[in-house]
Length: 248
Image (tube, rainbow, N blue to C red; front, side, top):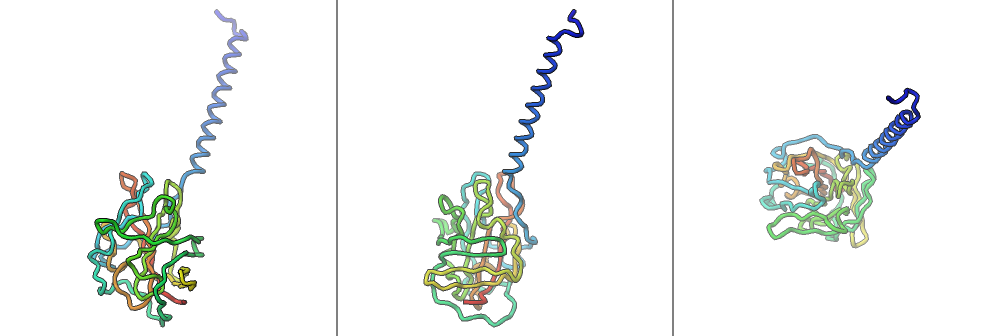
């Protein structure tokens, strides 16, 4: 029998306590790291049925969150160029439209965006492509839409997250009527737009006509992913911001 005061027994207890303390410290450090590296949820505007703004022309996805690789998305497709969107800007005198000139950068002070813009087109099946690679965190102007400041809806998309980190349009859902969006153009001019509407739409009810359809004056559409994630880690909704030209 080992005596109660045996130093070997006391030493074993001290070793156990020390090991438990080290494990506790390691666990706390891992938890702190996980919390500090976790991406919070982006702002979510009100969820709206796409049928209230368009013909519900199909899904639009600016990214695949799970693997960090972009998914391809539908372009204007069935949206008739002459079909007016049902989501209309408030009546107000509009400044003169600008001649064609591609966008070069985008600034949205309300959400801290100041980033370059590059043109992007359609894939082989007519889908709107998404930013990827070295341009993944930039905003992308759909080159099949009017340039910002021309008559019609100019369409700019961007990722909400990329590779698990916030991307260019992470805060897009926080925009509200009255917020300003400035777009620098290749010819040295700047087009300033005022937000008049913002909403979240299920991807299977994407408001195709409201986004791509004809408008009476120069307008802007900003698009990103939103909503909950499906079992593959992809967002179920899209945020769409509608803005009109107020200064050129």
